[in-house]
Length: 179
Image (cartoon, rainbow, N blue to C red; front, side):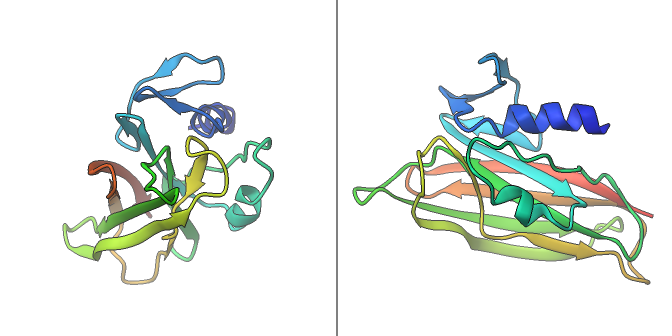
């Protein structure tokens, strides 16, 4: 995906009130279809993004009016770092206005073996700082660097995002190629 298209995608996906009535909306309010890496279940939304930006955190930690632009990483060379970011929006809140989101994390090597397989990892627990339908970054950020001896080919990232209060389970999937 070229940079211009990625900017449009991020602007669509990171619209600060983009999840409503069970679908993602673009900046004009038009529905955007679900993909493997961006979907909604009911009003709960999830997004999975792999970026090569070493400054992803600085880009994310801006005012809600600023839409960050991330460079999507689809091809990675050995020795280069990438970061898998998990986003969510509009979780169910309890009586104390707190969310409870966990996720299963799995990375599958090109040979079919698992590099990571963690279940029920805390993604977010507690009070949201802002409106529930804002986009939030989940706690786990997967930092990957291709090392000598790592198999080349397609690595698959499978994340199952779980809104435990609303009993919603959302599978998200993306991939990158290690060369």
